[in-house]
Image 1 (cartoon, rainbow, N blue to C red):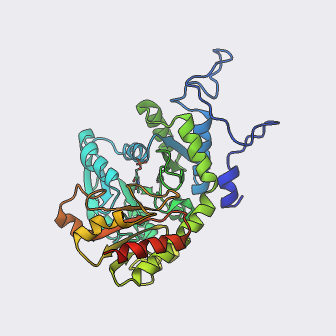
Image 2 (image 1 turned 30 degrees about the horizontal axis):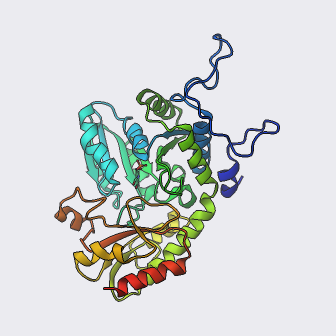
Image 3 (image 1 turned 60 degrees about the horizontal axis):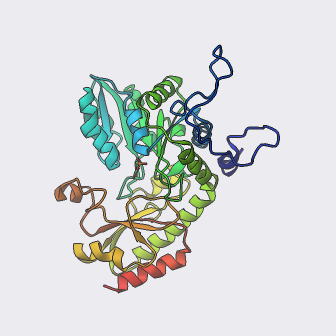
Length: 379
Ligand code: PLP
């Protein structure tokens, strides 16, 4: 099956007269027919039909053998990071989602795991940062909020030479735009809260791998630690995924239009979007992505105050954290996702106080351009 079909039919159960949509199995526990044989479903923390459907659909879209669903994207990343044990070293991309940074900085050391950082834009820095005990490497692309593009294959091949297991966060791109397992990644993480769910109404995560040992580890972490999704949450994400392919097409087309509009606007100093030909990762993105994604950030040609108050002038864009929903969102990294960094750290990462990040939704792009035009004209 091709991708758009897989998103809808990957999890087919052929019972006669079955409902077209999988029902929501709102039960915490399941009956046994006899105590001689363990049934498929026993207790919802260990698994349930809605979670199984979600896991198999995301695994199919990523081209992986196994998926394990979690109660949030961060819970899934945390489970993947737990592949590192006491005495191991983990290499984390310097440009990484803040929640992953927090896990690396504040949770792994409590488990006796050492953490080091590397520059994911420069695959050679893997060897420079690696230690003899480096077990895992974690990275993502496009990066947040500057939308830099890392060479997935380049980073992974360097890690493989050193026998390091690679964990890749594919939340921004989704499997529709890039499939990290094809580039050799061992583990792919998703916050299904974003594009996979797609409607800003559910928090969740799925981790995919083709390695049976990693799968066993993820499954036992999910069951033992218990950060798993309930039936309704899993069902909502499955419903969202059915329209993922056409949604991503429109998200990406509109984002490119918005990026081009902003790049040509006199009140905008800089636009970060890999679809723009002058973006430093444009050629690489063309090679490893099927489209350029629907996230962008831009610097207002004005003061920090102008950027901080820009969202209030917008009529359609809503000021909120998160991304990947049908509605366009605008966020201010200085006060939101990157508030924990010092100003110096933010500037060194290309996050000046005039930077705004935008997640392009599924509104008519002409309305989005008009909204930005009037907000920029308003001062
Ligand atoms: N990965 C990325 C790239 C994200 O942007 C986020 C959330 O913003 C997460 C993971 C964490 O997802 P969740 O909020 O579902 O835990």
